[in-house]
Length: 183
Image 1 (cartoon, one colour):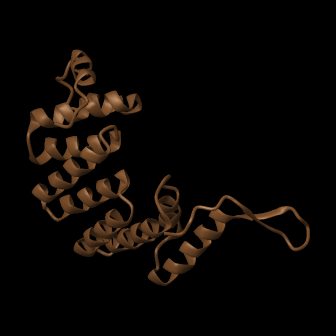
Image 2 (cartoon, rainbow, N blue to C red):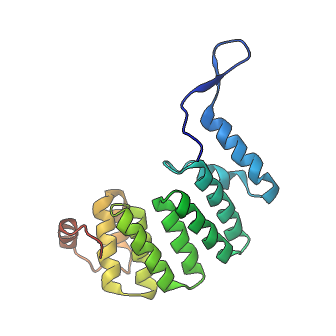
């Protein structure tokens, strides 16, 4: 993994900052994926994931391209590689979502469960897992996961107003806040 430097490159003899290193890294990522015909918006979205190593970002870009090309099995493999380099909640989330597209629900559950074990307060991971369970699994587990998601991040409270979760009362939030352990 490349070290995370915080220095700046200076312009030609001016002594003033010219380019931030992160801009250089983003440029390298754009150049590397240009041959894959990946829209730059996808590259920028992946490049802006805080805490994700450069190698893992490159794997995310490639996996994103594979998903857009319908190559879901290859994308899952790339997310696996990313997780082996740099376990990150976004990698667990994207791998599980890709497994869902392949209708590999048990594998997606295992991925969500492992991601939740490592990152128990990642609200988006909990939200996605709850939504999957509400569609293809255990409705009670789904509601519990969504309540925990809202406890972790109040900005996601709109999810509780979705039809599949609306019968939950606000008292469910206080129960969820007292049990923030994995389901």
